[in-house]
Image 1 (spheres, protein in one colour):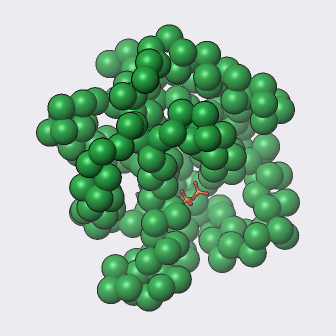
Image 2 (cartoon, rainbow, N blue to C red):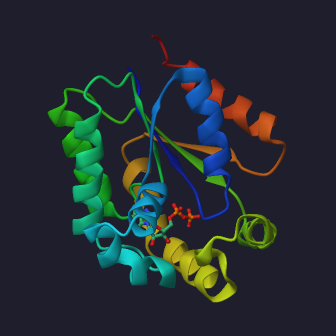
Length: 192
Ligand code: ADP
């Protein structure tokens, strides 16, 4: 079993690469962004609590995010491995994730950061906005999400780097090329 965190700014390609990784390795995909969108769309009590925060592009408070994540982990006791996408975004989230994994007798083996410049991210999201109509891809909200990434989320990287768990993959290039580079990292350890 391996567990992996895919890390990077909005628009880095986490969603695209996640799909390919799931197909190849059979990971259970946990995307906190998708989960939050599901809750807001279905107007669950959680969805109602976070709707405004999410629409503004700000981070949902750790307490809520961590509780939701724990619930998802508990729903999948027989997972072959987890792929975390959009989580952790803060150091307390990263610490909780380690605690949860340890509690299940496992760990996060790889943190793979997709390295993409801010300019590239903005260009990609502008394109996606016209195709997907995501409320939080509007310009002002997008600016907020990018700021949240570069002021808060980025601090998660040194946390992992100090422990020798961080792998950086150049995130500009063809989808297949980037995928291959991620797979090379996983191949160092993967066995099923
Ligand atoms: P992005 O395209 O910015 O990577 P996501 O789809 O991962 O977006 O997340 C969308 C929104 O969901 C974020 O802007 C934030 O409000 C909320 N969110 C997702 N994951 C987290 C998290 N780990 N911590 C706090 N908020 C989160």
